Amino acid sequence: MKERFGGIERLFGAAQLAQLHTSHVAIVGVGGVGCWSAEMLARAGVGQITLIDADELCVTNINRQIHALDSTVGQSKVQVMAKRIQDINPDCQVVCHEAFFMASTANELLLEYDYLIDAIDSVKHKVQLLAECRNRKIPVVTCGGVGGKTDLARILTADLAKTRGDMLLRKVRKELRKNHGLKNSKRFKMLAVFLDQDMILPVVDADVETSRKLDCDSGYGTSPMVISSLGIRAADLVIKKLIAKQSV
Image (cartoon, rainbow, N blue to C red; front, side):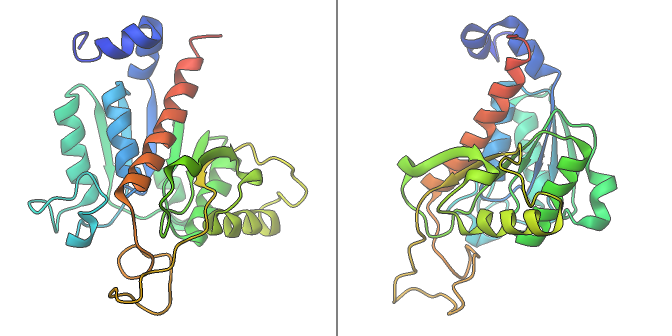
């Protein structure tokens, strides 16, 4: 194990690596953004990772999801990602929940995590998850939308109350203010990773639905460079927060 994560130890320190080894991080949504977060957490030496998603991999995922291959199409996203993590670090404890997060599954899925990454792309369920994390005092990093976005230089981090240029997070923020006791809050005390960029409409000759919904398979196009970078940045924030516990 020392050789496997020697690079992390030399960069951050032995105590900080030990902190990562004993940390438990959950990822809700193991699709385009979440799979890259999971990959980085595993390669940084996080000792326990919980993966939450009920979807199966399909061929349209191949352009943006690290676990989507011709050989894995049709398989469970969390199971394929878990196998990959175990290959990276056999000592990592991986917990798989083949379920979607919603109000009815909150008690089953939300445990005492050291950190949680929210990579859900549904406004309703994203709001429910963030509200539950706030109520349960689970530290969280939430990820913004990636459909129709191309500019890596415009990836930003901010308190969720201060994000800009992100339609998904704007809708989430509105619902949290309206229905979850954050009406007058200047800060939500939840970190967000997002792109301050207007979405680019699909090209006119592409095979898309006219609804222009936030759906990577049939609406806005997707850049693997942007999606992976957003997931990596979310993992980076979590890793820095975890090792900071050994630096104070």
